Amino acid sequence: MSTGQLPLNVFGNSYPRKPGRIVLNFASITKDFGNDTFTLDLDEGWTAGLDIEAKDVIGLMQEGLYVSEENAKMHENYIEWSNNNPDRVLRCYRYYTLTHPKWSGKLLVQSNDTNIVSGFRLEHLSADRVYHAFSTVKSGDNTRKVYWYDPPPKGPKINVLLDGEPLPGL
Image (cartoon, rainbow, N blue to C red):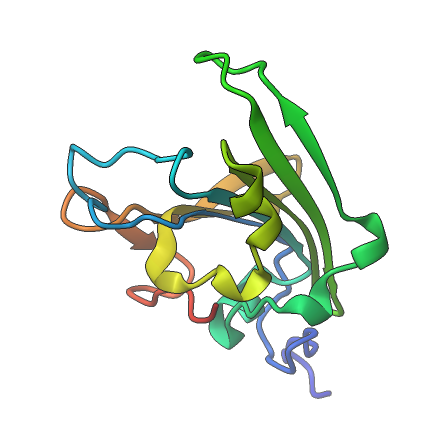
């Protein structure tokens, strides 16, 4: 390594590693994305929240986030039921623990129909089902937002680390 050159990060690139977090929210029913009328339908479908801790957010944004059954630690996954929500409906929750050499994460899938939750598979996650996403990086003692996505037409798409690039993958 010559003087002035940055060390390679986990992705083999020479920019400084930025650890951080990527959060993606998915919905199975997407017909009204971006409209003021969009609501989450937990009676007929599911929602999922994917929360990833990455060793290198920039590298992950460039390479893309790909999640599959191979990432699931099956012995750590579980389900719960609760009616502790505003409408007092019995809701089923399915929790996943996910691992990858470059990131780790948690996934929560929920629906009012237990059969929908039990039939959920990780391959049901896709970029066209994302209704909100953001990413943060750690900067000293602070956490800074570096990526923000809400579906068009109402939402902005902001990527301050890689201008104009969406997060590829899924």
